[in-house]
Amino acid sequence: MTQFSNRQLFANALEWYLHPLFPSIASNKTMKSLKTISLLSLFTLSAALLSGCAAPARTDQMTAQVSPALRVANTPMRNNVAVEDVSGGKETNPMWVSNVGNSEFEQALEGSLKDAGLLSAGKQAGKYLLTAHMQKVEQPMVGASMTVTVTVNYVLTERASGKEVLNRTVSLPYTAAWNSSFVGTERLRLANEGAIRTNIGKIIDEIFAIRADQVALN
Image 1 (cartoon, helix red, strand yellow):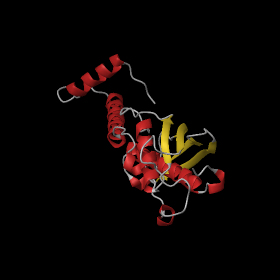
Image 2: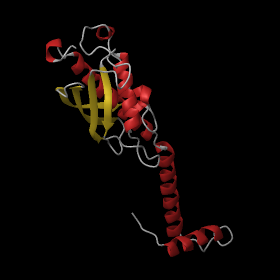
Image 3: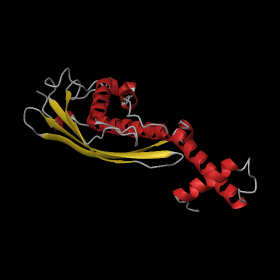
Image 4: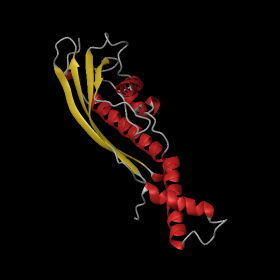
């Protein structure tokens, strides 16, 4: 691509504006150069308009919904899980890309546990404590369909004894299709939300799979 110095650009622009009065001044080369610059500027502007500003992930879109059967399934975890700590999240910079912060992740995790009938009445009420550490979020910089993979380590312990009941690292992808939004930053946010929702759904399945003989019932 041809590079232009500030002096060259000024001279070319001057010729462009003087052209109606002095047609012989503007050379064909100058006119072609300015047309190229105009097209590049238009392309850059269009890309900026289509990309938009990045927005953080929405809690309600990250909340996992369990099946009706799981909502009534027999489990020692029923109304017994309190979220102790969530870490590893990253706040969204509106001028960069959409991310998932710790607060949004925690709210989505608690909302999902509540929907499943696993969340305790309060943080001090649950017999079991759940921690979640977001280890990695793999995001594309550009793309039509965007796939995000979130890796989270979950640890479930008995409050009274400190015994580790469950330790799982969940890493699952989610793809936001190219036609889910015409704005790139919005597609990335949808992919982030879907990846977190899928991740939380998986750990809830793992919690439901814990047998009564694996944990203290009193």
